Image (tube, rainbow, N blue to C red):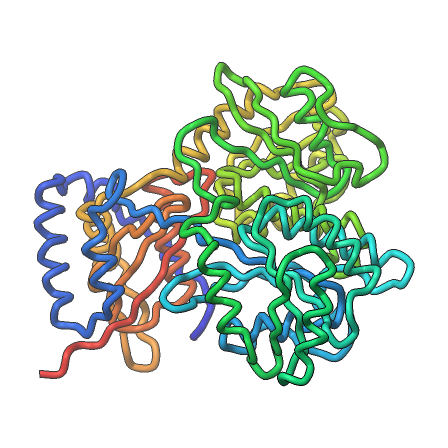
Length: 501
């Protein structure tokens, strides 16, 4: 399908026409369209979603955060093979080379009807000198971000000094830890698993990630202690709104937090990457209490990062997962970089509300300001909807403008359009500007509903695939009519065929 933009130039008076459709009429029309869906082949989760349109606050269902299982261990003990075995599909890269897994990768899994998130943690640099510390740091991240930890040891090789480093951390944690003695392919090798009792982590579970031996029994035990809802990534309701301050190293994130807190809470240093861990602080700003997280800077090439920088980027992702809105700090004294764009895209992928803070504004001269506006127009056109604040974190200039920007983004993130109004919008829009004919066919939108907020997520039931350009056109018109400043909008399709009579 083509990815061309759909952009009719004429003024269609859409807002005026929608103003002429009252709420009652809109609901009646939507009910007729919904009944029309019964003529199409709907799936079980279609019906569940359509029925669930009335669930939860303001008709939105909030899914609980899935429990998190993390797999840790030194290189080449079979972590990725175990991931594939648990998931029942080949997802993780498996290669007989230490350190192939360079990133923290999350997968959705299901075991006996229970869903969970599985985190395959690699990410250390395989250099002989620093590997003990690197593996220990990786385990520390996994412990922080998981409900249950699976510690994998190569039972054939036995426990090494690197394993001992990780064991010291695991002994201190209050979270359930399962010691997996991997590469036990048959009963003759089981005495090698028993030798791992002396690590002090309890009973070793003999498994073979390669052949699947013992994995099911081990998972049965894991699920006895795994919570139904993650205690780590749980969705908090109420309390101060959670703000992640993100950006590449040395753009002024810590200075911004210190100025907002009116005291030195975070070490500020000219060296890029001083901040390693997110620092949660409750701060009063604009007459409200906010929970700010100052995150370590994200570097451009994750897989080339050394030691602590790599784990800082993992923690930054974790901070985004826990936040509701992200403030991306950009240093305007330098050209907008690929890193800046990548960080913004990371926020979009996380589905969080977005505010862009252009820092060091007091250092701009007229020439740089002209170039900057051109860079913003070219590189950040896809987030033109994000509130923009020009600040100086060092002096505190215009910091007070951050609060209305945050409030606007969060209000948009929480916005719900009633089903009647949304279908009136779709009907008026598609009558005036129908989808172009492609290959002799013209897909139609049968019905639409907002399935979720945070971010606003819309589902369209259609008779065929909608061009990406046409979906972006729908998103653009939604923004024109309903605002949505500061939040990504997700438009999903469900292509359904007419029932056979």
